[in-house]
Length: 429
Image (cartoon, rainbow, N blue to C red; front, side):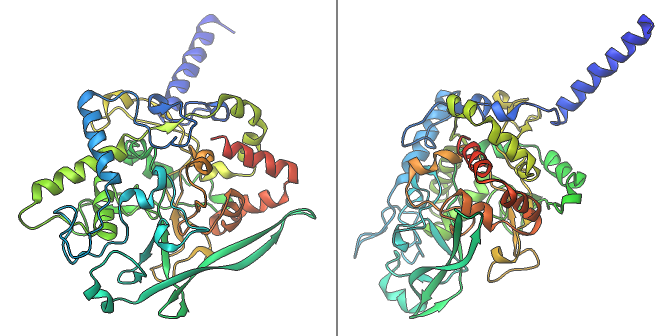
């Protein structure tokens, strides 16, 4: 080969490598990656791994983060016969929880099993439906149906092998003395959400447009949200179980209203509300992602290959490369992160459809997996999936259906040892 020809092909290869890297499709070694959140990774393996701030904050950012942490943990219940604890909570507010932290236990998933409803991470959809003992004005109790209890009913028993059988349960509510199907939402984990907010909207839309895995039944829909509420401009949705919020500020505002009864006042405490919203959104935005235990990552490489082989990465996309536009904080531009989500909505099958809804009632946004293996350290009884029905990761996998059917079928075909290897890999994230 002539020197000029060789030089040409070398140049083509170099250009191709840079192009692939810029589009986020380079074959990076995600199986061995330790710092999943890049510069916003922290080495925190104790009982509060999700509650650490990003390590590279400015002094002003740390100040707002600290204020947000205080507001996040503030008990907003009203003492009997007294005014609200804080002036933003109206006297007739419908309060589903005592504080943000009472649902997002340790900034992780809500506790849904082996405790009573009032201590759980549940909220009820739609309102009004009142949990017994919820924090409401006694005079208004008669306006609401009484949510008295919640049962876990056996729905399926799946035989994986001669030695392993898995029982899948789902929640059934007792309302005014009778069983009734209601839509429940469990509180999701909060770590790393600021990085998901920094993923480019055009990249999310491109991922859906490519339909790389359509031959396996996986399509994916871009979530749509309204900036600033129903009357706002449509944008790519990122937060909430169905991606109904396009920014952390919108998500926090929705949670303040639906769970704590706090809305932007028409007059009076407008500045206080804006400060609260900014502090809480900043707190969530700057929660770091715990690093993987290096020894666990090394020990579970085979499980990562199985994770890839059965097709989990078709929805739980390992990595994203953040862009360099001005809307992204300077310290994050160009960073590669490993959240294991494609940020899209997928049809998860008839068993995960909600009681009420439109044609997308069985669609759910792919949850990020980073840090998931530390959940058991944060709170016992934490539930997985939108209504917390899955008590562990195996149950969460087996509830998948619809677009995930191909991967679940491959999972069931694995040997017991390989399923255990796959589980250990996910638990090492």
